[in-house]
Image (cartoon, rainbow, N blue to C red; front, top):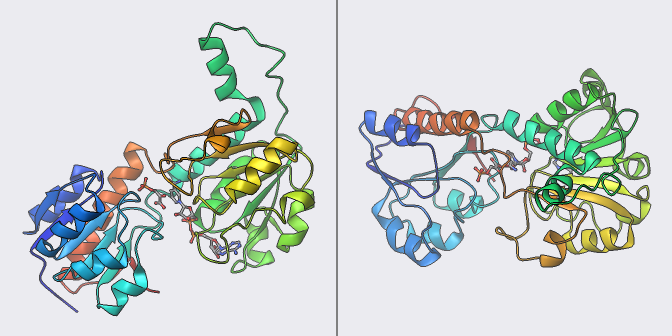
Length: 317
Ligand SMILES: NC(=O)C1=CN([C@@H]2O[C@H](COP(=O)(O)OP(=O)(O)OC[C@H]3O[C@@H](n4cnc5c(N)ncnc54)[C@H](O)[C@@H]3O)[C@@H](O)[C@H]2O)C=CC1
Ligand SMILES: O=C(O)C(=O)COP(=O)(O)O
């Protein structure tokens, strides 16, 4: 299936290498970031292609307004900000670049786990504020602790391999990955209900879908070890934010490291201001290397699709 593509809108902060590649293949590109919903709806009829990261919400309304839209590209992994059924209904191809930012998300997760163990962000702030709090920030070792990984796909399994080098025991659950395959990367596969009581740390690496919304929530926290620490570098809402606040306040949860939030930027002050929460503003994929990779990959995929060469990276509902 080959088609023509005349003008692409890049509506998020994507590396300029994306526009350069598209333009060198005869496709016009406009970059307009931080558009309001109304501005995007007004602009979209002028384009037959759209490229986004996670900030732009490509809702059914936007897709409906995109009367000339043929292709939507996600320079990154998660496509939960794109209404894929609405796009499919209109015959619009949706593509992502899974893999291009995997290593960056993995390394961010590992850094978050280390920060949780040693209170590095809190100690850093305290020292900058003029204190010398050596007692307050007593930490714990990662060696000998159990890390549970929910979602053993591209990111989950690479987090496991890296944290094994800290002598952590890695256990995990994924409905599509077998116990045999998990053993190949050193993870003991367990049914999810057997995970909770064993974990000292839990990190989630699933997409946000109905089955994973609130996966860690008011039912799972009470059956976890007291003081369990949780990490979310996947999607806001996989760990239920209200249940997390309650668990942090009761001490059932000993700390949380969050890169993603139900609302971004987050408005949940009880969560963000909790002293046991460390957080980053959705930085998992924000490295020079990952941003170059995903920008080039999505541009190449667009050009290949236009030329009818391949629909690599296409996502369907
Ligand atoms: N914070 C950030 O900047 C970044 C976040 N991400 C997010 O990380 C997540 C994972 O990405 P990848 O590892 O590349 O995806 P992947 O598709 O390779 O792996 C996801 C795994 O989750 C599993 N899964 C689905 N439902 C599950 C359930 N109910 N319980 C346990 N496992 C389940 C799938 O079977 C799959 O193996 C995505 O949500 C993605 O958007 C990815 C890159 C950067
Ligand atoms: O690729 C993903 O799923 C991410 O969450 C990265 O999001 P971003 O492209 O940094 O807005």
